[in-house]
Length: 115
Length: 112
Image 1 (cartoon, chains in turn cyan, yellow):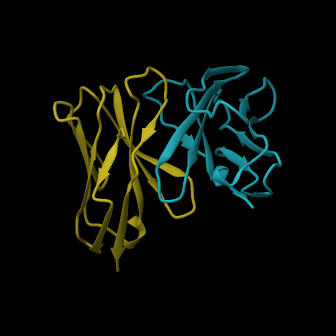
Image 2: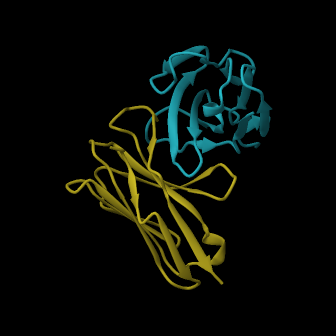
């Protein structure tokens, strides 16, 4: 039973380019969370999605960031026109029911570097 | 100010010693969780304690929760070099779904 998969593991972009980060949840999990971790800091919640629905995007910057979790395929975190401040590790996590008592299973993260 | 602040920021001990990390939070919660992160890796869930629980054990881990003080502690007994990692507490801010708020973490170094 594969764990949460994220790709790419490392992504380098120049300022102004787009970054697409993918997350495949654990088998049977339909709840996905995205977090961002800046160097030497804890994780910050970005967005919570169920299949085809955004439930809570209160942690997403208002511009340039979007997320989706289609009926088929992985969840995508998209960052348009990246800036240096977007450089961070982006983690997704999945859980079976979405309840706060669930264990969230984390992927290995995508480390985005913006040049 | 930040929900879920860990103390100390860094802890260095010898193998075999116990390590205690503390976490404070500001709002009401349903649950509090502790996670471990090895350098450059994702987070691994260690233990969840519900707001109506005071203490929980899992192997060499012991977690306490004091909701009146809005604080929790994680004790690792008989530490090993492999316990070297960052440890984070995470709270749900009272939400019914898993919107976790993490502290900045405690960096634990266990010397062989």
